[in-house]
Image (cartoon, rainbow, N blue to C red; front, side):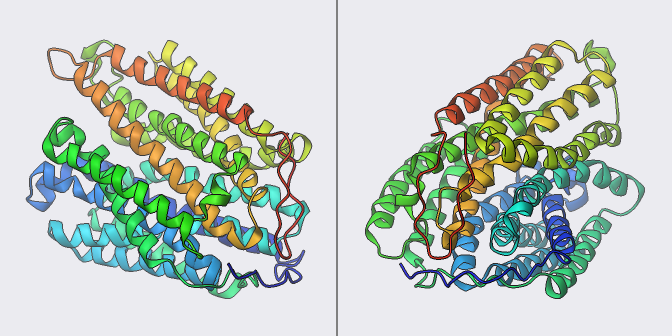
Length: 481
């Protein structure tokens, strides 16, 4: 593999660093907003679009699939061609997708627009990697924690904002607003974000990209559609088999090609492998709250455990969590600076487990779910800030975008598995009226707590000190104790 260019003094100097970080964090929040943008509209899409519910579900599924495929590909291209350049690409895709969706009046154009929006998801790991290239070490920890937390912040704030807009005006306004935010952020990136001098060079691994795309699409399609098509159906079984076979063939190819899409030799380093494994489990834990709490809040009080609230109130209950994630990012950076990101991630996992434990016991009033969601969000804020630091401490500087993108993909896989498993539980444990039982909700929360504990154990197996990273112009790794 070609060596990276020699590190140059940061273009984001001391005076410009706060603005640089603010623009990148705003970009992350804008991109993550699109994840929850359509949640309030999902039950209404069959009526709004004149299509069956099974077909309108593709409005969500299409974004999931394109995001999964685009994230590692964009990360590798960013290492080769420039991180700022690929950030601009992501924002252009977000704007284009928003415009297409805003102009749509039927299902197919809306799916196209949402698919284009999904291509922007890789922007957050790009921002983290660009920070590593441009910021001095004393600013890097807090900046990457804030950028990583922006994924959760946008998702948490997007739900109440989308619910309010959907109730107050035409649903197309949501996409016009998303496109407008994208334009503002794009202007900020072009004006205030410098291009990194780091380049991996080499050729793009087309075969690896196609293989990974086929494997991911097959896996995620099977996971997301298993409940609808039947877990034992021929289509689902075939998709799982295709995913397994192609993934094995892809791994064989990546280990033998000179310039792989994903450097598996680096990815199988203990620190990187265990962090990515923990990210899958943690992704499961983090998403469980988004599946359970809105339903508990909106179920009628006649069930005996539902709280009878609107989708807007449900979103407002989760909104403080988004602010807490942002507030915890500097705390995460301080703990990592003092004790290492490994310790921070373990602490975050423990806090998340406690939050779910509180929710499993106390969920009879709105305020109880607010407290539980805030505790969980604080744990997520701690953990989100630590994951990129663990990854970047163990990979060469010219591979940071690809490595962070892969870590982001692992978290996305965890959320997909959470959606599938929680969906099965909530669909199988139902009352005579056909709604999930209280036991089903408590079980999902306990699974969230258990997943957080499993992540804590996995992270505990990460070596206290990172292995030396040989890379031209690389920085001293962050301690992981």
